[in-house]
Length: 473
Image 1: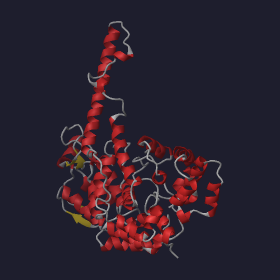
Image 2: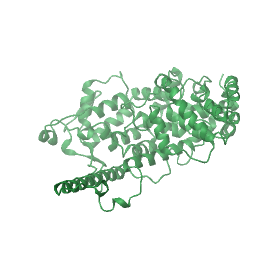
Image 3: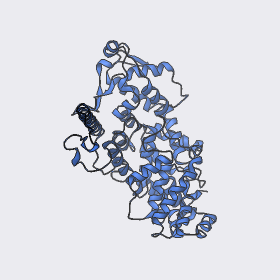
Image 4: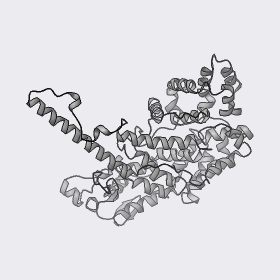
């Protein structure tokens, strides 16, 4: 029997969003499914209202920043050598950088500023959402098509805004095309270095193929493992993708933007998954991606991952089948797929077995606090990193794991953050009232009693956000 009323509302907000905000359980109790579905229809759903640079502009700015720092270091080195030659000791303060550097306000280095600004826009969108379903979808797809800020620090946030957000409620094929041609992905998976062995650049530079992008597109982004493709398919697809690169970030106008470099492209037709694709330049790669996006194995792979993300590590097979059918019937319409997820009875099982990863847990705490003092984004990023889920820094191209086993051992490390949260809001909220706002009928009698018997408000609030009902969705 699926839950109803306030219980269904609380379940919906935790399972499909980032948990309740003040008063939100009561607000959606009359029609929880309708409220979640309504989030898909909001004007501008999935977008962030922030004045942030494009990925290309950010990469060019970081290139200039690093070039300037290099020049400052050289000037300082020259001055040091001149002082040593004159037999003088040069004071540290005299090692002046470029003339205007002393006028700069004290703030984090530019790459860190860019990441923090992007992270704040992302965190605020989730923390301030009415429901949060679309933001959850954005986070899901961003992790599915992940890049790493360790390799593309200036571009990771903009990549999510440019390649993921505009297509999160569109068609999978459009997101796939945007992702695989984005300079952040091309650089992250080394395709900017890939050149056909018999291409002009390959011959002249004695370099060749890099298969990373082709392999991960097949294995992670579309078909999934053990879906029937061969090593020959990987190699041929990598040939197809040669020439997909970027303009070097040092170019002042269009640096770090996509470019198809003809001299790096392996000329000729290629066969991928039994189909021959004529050499049409960049169009050859787009044709392969179009077919991969519509492949039945892709539908199955995406359906499985989506169900596992929202409902259970081992989702019910009928739910996966419904999502797979929705994908195939609508040419990969991701909004229709999301609707299918919400209306399926299998998605509303009262058993809450999914453990919130650190990032979602942090947002859940921000949503229930109701305080006016926002948490500095640097502290949020530090907390995520400490808990093993540094923003836009997954350990591998398959993104962060989405299973309980990956996060359960790290739950004790959340205690310090829970204690810090409790200390900040203890004077502003009542723990039992907050428990009702955050969990409603989901809170067990044992959890309520534990909160009530706490030695202080601070301890009670820490116990609340560490309760099993709050840790799960």
